[in-house]
Image (cartoon, rainbow, N blue to C red; front, side, top):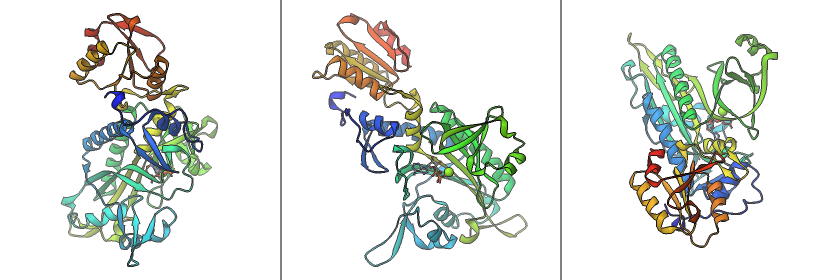
Length: 407
Ligand code: ATP
Ligand code: MG
């Protein structure tokens, strides 16, 4: 992609009402555009990052037998009334009436509609277990939309739901998902801490995946030797005793919850009549679990933990482009490098602009944050200057050597 053709431009100042580092850098870099508090649009650079996050999640969900589907955002009130959440979730769910005074909602999670849909397909123990997921826009009436992409009113979520005949089967699959979550976050360069959190009515705990960061809204107590933590919301003497943890050995941390997994039991299947016939011919409610990851929150989290005062430092796995190539009055040679790398399948963002100073170009490269920077200039002669975004020192390499470095 040539920067002279790019839809977005970098911006000197982020909007004054934006306080979060992730939003400031992502807006300034042209990754996202702000619509209003808690609502962002993904511009081409941001969309590329999002697609890479999508693909990592897809690969890991498919690898544990998840089948991708797409539910409706538009919600039928009856299905939510059956579990009582039409009322109890009124604060978070956007609800409205159409011209005929009929009520609808916008999905903020999908347990109810999925349990309802599953009634058509799950009837027997032979139909279990099953796992389905989607990557879809959710809406939540968040009163505290203040942390940039970390807390949106409209945001992308990956939500996986699993259906089981027995608790043991669910427990096993739940651990499989926890491992897959670990791989998703690791592939994006994030260190997550599996954290005991409140479990709702069917399980003592849910598990959150927390990333240490000052901007985080969660307080967790980290048990370093166990590599696990407990969320402040369940940090009681009783829970610590149950875990066998000593209060004195725990360290308080501020963190961002990037994922959350829940054992739901029959909380949704029972009221919605999602039943199966077991081997003996008895009818039983299906046992469910749900598992969420916030994609925008993930993207924002990566920026929070991986930036410096000049801009973003993307990990290679989700960078919008692998290489930021820059010509300083050597467009002919730079064009050749661009063509050659592109031919080899390497993603290159090429700053071919003639109306920008070297200083402006360097500043943009640091702000956008691609993992590798290449400079072609009078100074570099026949060679190319190469530098990692995360490192200070650059070196000169011959053109034929280049591609090998990236493949
Ligand atoms: P939080 O406690 O942060 O409000 P939650 O526990 O309500 O989140 P879940 O319902 O478990 O969130 O949603 C699954 C995942 O979706 C979360 O782990 C988070 O990554 C993401 N998520 C939730 N709410 C938002 C939001 N408002 N904006 C962006 N991502 C969100
Ligand atoms: Mg949560």
